[in-house]
Image 1 (cartoon, rainbow, N blue to C red):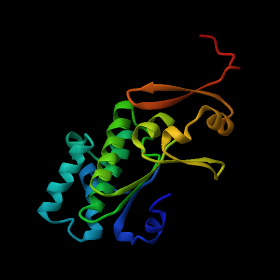
Image 2 (image 1 turned 30 degrees about the horizontal axis):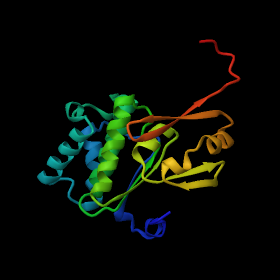
Image 3 (image 1 turned 135 degrees about the horizontal axis):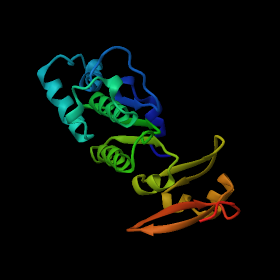
Length: 198
């Protein structure tokens, strides 16, 4: 995968991570948690930092909830706060955004919002590496995918090259078909032996 060496060699100040689960202790608001992304820059108390935090929260559809206690937010809202925190950490010179199941807890509209926001970072010259189990979202938003089977590399390349029915069937033991939506081929899984009636 192009750029892996750069990712490994990148300094800690050049990457930001959003994990599957992020616990936050204390009575912090969504705004305060997002603003933690500025801590590494030592400017979290500056007015410009606050303005930037509000802009990024707005970009993940959380401006109305910025004052709410983080602990009271839904799982999806917490995930978007964590994305905002990571995005704030990247400004101005971060190069890599690492996302581990960033669509966990999100409804379909929020899934597309988060991945479109991540995709926008690539247009700013940043690399984005995301772990996704939703093949349709990976096909829609990724330039390149890595297909693994129990940690073993099966294939790597453009989604249309990697996501073939035969290859996906070999990995998951289900039947797959490809449905074209716009210019994207979306893999759909089905189990022909299912006893579930329609």
